[in-house]
Length: 373
Image 1: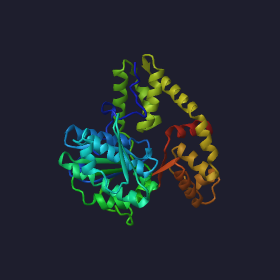
Image 2 (image 1 turned 120 degrees about the vertical axis):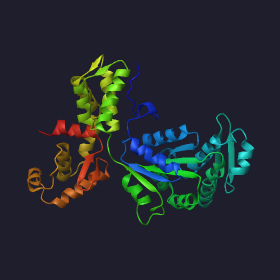
Image 3 (image 1 turned 90 degrees about the horizontal axis):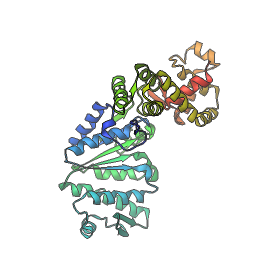
Image 4 (image 1 turned 30 degrees about the horizontal axis):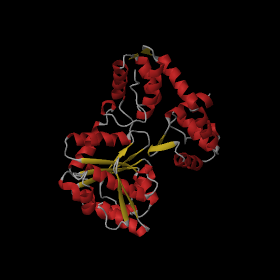
């Protein structure tokens, strides 16, 4: 029997949990021919949310939707080639290579080639300046093809493309601001980088599109229904106290809930209860022990450890005199520096002013069990 809890797999609509408001927001904005920037913490289901929105759009049969994971491209030229290739595959000119080449391929490219089985377009160019001209030209192709169907183009982890070539953001802005039949969704998980690219006054994209900041975990009621349903439909059951422990440990975080439920399902013969979930949690902590101990060894200051230990206890008053005395902290500024350092290395994230949380909830539990009295 196949485990019903999926981790790291391609989007499947039947196991998508909630996010109804966020999905409706994206679909509505695209329906109005707008562009969007979607950003938020890693592992919160940002990519699945976008794919769910594309799924809803494609059900209407009114859009071509293209998804690009920017992290897979080593250079800008690899992205350009893949962009053209996917446009060709979604156009009505599939199988009519000569016509597609004649009408749509960039004139600035020094060489284009086409290979069969499966079809793949590649190109070569001699200079960075020429590559920029090619990028400008290929960004015009979706608008040219829009008489068939408008395009929705998703650029996931867009900040990685900018890291490959800092000129990319200006080139994108110069083209998409004039397009009326193509919508773009720029997405990223590096909060500071995305804010700098889209939300600062110096950015070419400032105030040019709506944005969705994904920070919240999933609603508890939706998670409980999902857990019950997945166990039941796979021929097993989960008790209320089993669900309680999963929710207490994962707080509705989509990835960590799936991870713990997946391991608990594997350990369950017929009924998953509190003990099965607890044992599964210990297995998860043991499996990650080496990585978690390595993170602890990265901590260089007393203040960094104090911050993590305090947050592991769910304390809300780290800056008061009693807490600072308990941890031997002399000045509140040193705590602020420690928080910023822990955010910079990806152990913590800021929710809002004065509120922080672990990016890995199992690491939080590891600290609580192994280091706190």
